[in-house]
Length: 295
Figure 1 (cartoon, rainbow, N blue to C red):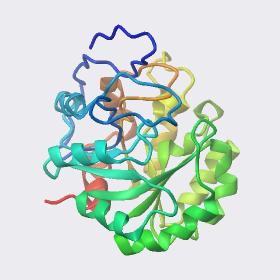
Figure 2: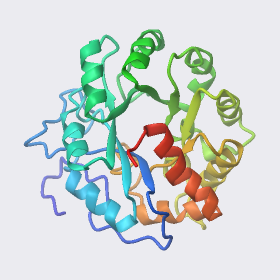
Figure 3: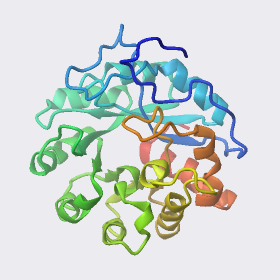
C-alpha cells in the first residue's frame, strides 16, 4: 500500500507472506486493531501518532493468508472511545469477528449493553506511559456493571506495574485478561521479579494472559531463531496455564520498534505450542470458550 504522506506511520506489511505452519481449523487471533479508513472513521484528537489506514479489508486479507478463521478486534487508542470502527468490522465478520471496546469508567449501562449486543466481549483499559488511562479504583468500580453486561476486563500495563496492580485486579468482579504477557522484558528471563509476579498473578483462575507480543518484549528480533527470548516466556506460560492462555498477532503493530513479519509470528507458534494438541488448546478451544464464539 503506497503512501505519499511522510507524516503517516505505516505500521504493518501490506503484502504479507504465508506462514510455513498450518493452523488448526477455527484458529483465532485474539488481539488485533483496525485503523480507519480515516475518511469514514476519524482518528481521535488524543492519539499519539497518525497511522496509515489499516482497515478491516486488510485485516481480513491477512487472516486468509495466515489461515486464521476467528478474531477478536481490540479498539485502539487511535480511535479513542468511538468504537464504531470495530462495530463495523464485527458486522462484516459474520460471527467470526468479535470485539473488545474502549470506554470511560463512567460509561452508561445502556452503552455497555449495546456493545455486548453487537458482539463485544470485554472492555480494555491502558496503564501505559504513552496512553492516557483511568485510575485502577475507577476501573474496579466499573467491574460489577461489566458483570451484568456479560463483559470481561482487559488490561495493558507497564511491566513493573504488575507488582502494584496484581492485588487490586484480583478484586475484579469479572475475569481479567492481561495483554502482551504483561510487557515483561524477555531478555531478563524467567527469573526476573516482573515475570515471577506475572506467574503468581496467573495462579488465580480469575486471570487470563495473551501470549501476544513476543516481538515487543524481545529486544533482539533478528536473533536466530526469531524472538527466542519472547518465545521462551510464552512457552513457559502456556505450559503452566494451558487453559488460560490466548494468542494474537497484535496487527497492525502500533507503537512498535519495527514492523514484524506476521508469518514469523505464526511460525513461532511451533515453538510456543510444540504439539498439535497444544496449538488446538491455545488457538481454538481457549478462545472459543472464553469469547463465546458461536459454533
